[in-house]
Length: 269
Image (cartoon, rainbow, N blue to C red; front, side, top):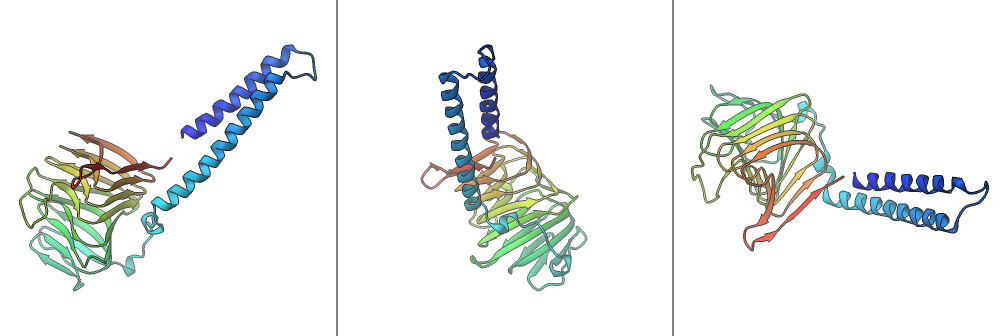
């Protein structure tokens, strides 16, 4: 955005310099004006080079799968969430009360609601899992609404024209050796994308946490968190999206807690 502004300003400067030369006789142009036009042309060429470099940086920051939003419902594993009893036909999903656990690689299409439950991803560490949120509402009074306990990478896609809600009620009970402290909590790389909307509410703790990289390539987000809004241990990378973040601390926060080194916040465009 700033680069576009610089280019516009440069063009305006050229126009003003040419106008200032109108008092001279027709067909003449001062050496200063020529030098200024030459300098501004060189600046624009440099800005063009910067645009190309930025495009290369963007390609390295976001994979094709980070940006993938299409899916075939017939090829997804459907999970219907319900307080009366969630259901799924696949053996890769186990259901115990209001806790739904995904244990194998695949694409899972979620719909329905849980008033006090959670969806847990617990797979091998070399496995990628994709969740399609298709009008989902999950509240957990004492943990994360979505908890990625183990995986290589998890993608959460917001289905088109859907509103999705994930929330924590204000406390976090210890369920294992991980310090769960957010409405969406991931021990692995996490990507959020799609064209739907997601509201995240954390009355205590953070909104969205990834203990590796947090990547967002699209979607509309309304995040209310007592502490950090969006948190990535190694990096936060944003390609696109609309964001409203109300946070008690940082809206965007990245820090390696092991050695207290700052991570990377990258916002394309």
